[in-house]
View 1 (cartoon, helix red, strand yellow):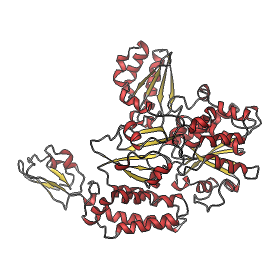
View 2: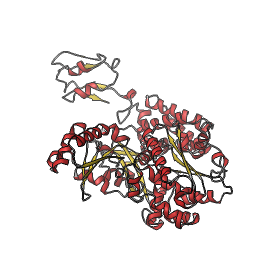
View 3: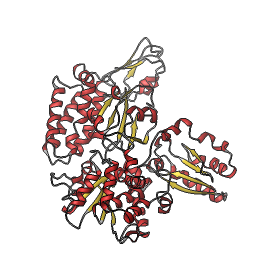
View 4: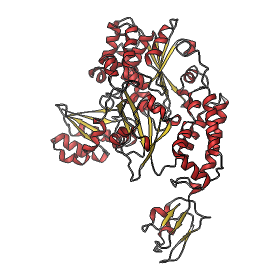
Length: 585
């Protein structure tokens, strides 16, 4: 019997995977085909969705990509006859196979392979064996030592040693302790945590239960943003199934260890990615950071000892227990152990999820795995670490992915968002985009962040409109320094990073905007002007017909002209001109 799996993470569903599944389900039933059909999560090849994987009896895999509902009869024909001719045009290319072949998957293991809605599928693939090993053969101290040996650092952004946080919570006095998962993934272009929960929720549960045993917690809480309805739905189902099988609740696996599980759906405030603001929200208050110390390990949720890690951190734990801390530490660099998951988005050809050992370079990820730019334009830079990260230019593309080495560039590892840009991207506009986000997401508790980010945004707005003044660059740098020094939490302290790094590496673009009133990338609308080259114009009138505001006039077979006072700079004229006569400057 063949096994058919349809990828139904959010990316697959948005591309039409649900319709593909329904069509296949109907045909398999009507034709009584010898095949089983199930869902799976995101394999990470988001740029190829919808994806249908067909496993033969011997385990061999046929991967079909860009599948539509109309392809279902051809797939059914293959299931009936075994003749690949009917699905040949859908088969993944050898080139695209390298996207996964060049990765090392630990946190993402099982994603896009197992059925996230069935606990038995997870257990059949070794799931909950690490929890059983921990509860039956290891002390909490031994678990923490194994995590220490692994060198696992928190994958939420700061890279703080996981074992240290676990040990601090364990050493804190008191019987009531909490283990919390930060699944409040808010970076634009980041979707690692969502994919893990949607695709392998039991792996998260297992990692959290191991962590709860290590610190002495009897309650686990997953704080996940409400914008992730599928993740919440599958996690709720996973918790229910694990409870029914005695993996969550009282006397887990007959070992005497008890732990409950619950989900808190957050409203989606970016500041709640900061652990103390998350705790405030979890308690029902407005999400605003607390002064530290005391740290959550001493006084956290309801002022009890608490430990907070993000989804990816917990997703590594079961693998470490199964394979040993030394096996995890053998991957990566001396300063950054193990693997890291990145969400590659932007102008890259192969957008999706990538997990690689630390120590690989940005070039390895963007060009070797990601396939480089999907346009014919040159790579310009990559925004790493989300709105609180920084922009790394093409000249530093060979920088190793390591907490210290990335930090030296002015960027941060962050949670793993990687937004790629080509030469058509305005770096001043990119800085403004991220500042607009952080200014809106500031909780307002401290003046440096609340007011400082607004002032930065105002200056960037002026520059992008051609109203920049001499001294604006220096003013931006001064305000950035004040915000970093005075902000209360990580949101404010890192909010200036996009501005500082774009000034550091693309200062010439700022100077062109301010001194020449020109956007080198041709992206800032207020600094763009369209004109028609009379020598190239054939007078076909197509540009005039496509102009939505009648800003183009002329006579047939004579050069046309654009009235700059009427032009709204939509670019339609340039798009339709077959002679390259329309020019933008």
